[in-house]
Length: 298
Length: 255
Image (cartoon, rainbow over all chains, first blue to last red; front, side, top):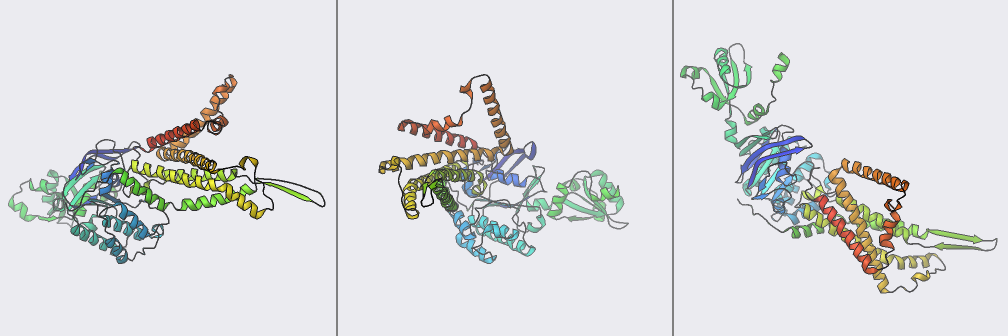
């Protein structure tokens, strides 16, 4: 359904995406995560056919995305910068979108406006930042497009509304399974609803797979400083921390740790814990050249 | 996959977009009314001569529809620029460059027809207004025997001139949007080059090379053969359509 093959995009010599490759063939609720400037918005705009790639071409439904009318009919993209005609009420905007998206569920849209206390007669440009985000999300979900791209959908929302919104996305996905891509910096908030993760860093796809795979990428290994120090020499350590004089913890890749084939006595002296997907994201995308501790301790 | 993949044709989408744009551009007609009201005001005050003595004062006022035409042209220029400049909002609904272009052109044509109709009725309307406000209104002999066909010709010519100006502004707006700051710099550079070339041509004594705006206007305005005039206008509009499409083709949406 979505296929990106070596997708690269430059803006005036600045690289936004570099050899970005992945494929999604089944309905999934995928979290597109990455730090600021990782290329998430550029990826979404390329998938929606807004941007012409420098090389490679994303294809959706077997067709090249750029300026393709079939792709446009079956993709719904929302983002903070999206624009509407000025002076138009929310009800009028719903009516306009209903004309273009054949599966648009106007009953759902009006029901959601009521649920979130958005006055249908209000003009979009007069909404607060959080209310505008909620309205955009209502549009996106009600459109019921085969591919729904939500770029930072919770921008400006209160924490309580954000929680509601993630539940809403999940509920809608269960009701009408389709490909939904959600981008955010805050993986922790949305990991409970996601089934897949697409991690982008510096324009490249670092990881793409089920959330469980992502959760098991790293382990936190805790034990005596002597054993941990010996492990540090053999493994790539993503973070090291001392817990008092006799205990040290390191974060390493699970696969590398398992490949060490440690003796049973050593294994028993260590405590091995999984880490959250959010922490995995941080370790994978952390800036090179040491953490904040090293900056202050040097 | 539960979702259905929809595959409506470009023309179907373009027509839906045209309808949507008409609904969302109803303000354009209010602006037209406003501009034409200003135009009527200036038409009445276009020229005035007065003479008199202690006992008698005679005021001769000329009602001239030219300001009305100029302001209607100004209106279509602004509409053309607006349509080209406010592109990104439509792409979030179903759109591509072709449908956006098609619906924009359709809207400029609709605007031109409405502008042409209002200008066709402007003459009789000015006469009516004149007879309300002044005691004695004399129609210029050149317009004394104007029949239905003349009115239709006026409508056609006004519409086609408005179409030229609207499409010209649209093409300008599309290129300005596409090339942003580079377009402004390029335009300034071109004007400077043209001026320099004209000065140079005048100095070396080849006046045929110098740019004369009046000859450009005269190319259409002084054309006596109706069919030739129509051909000139149609080719100009077609050329501007082509240039606009070249500008919008492969345009990215990235505001």
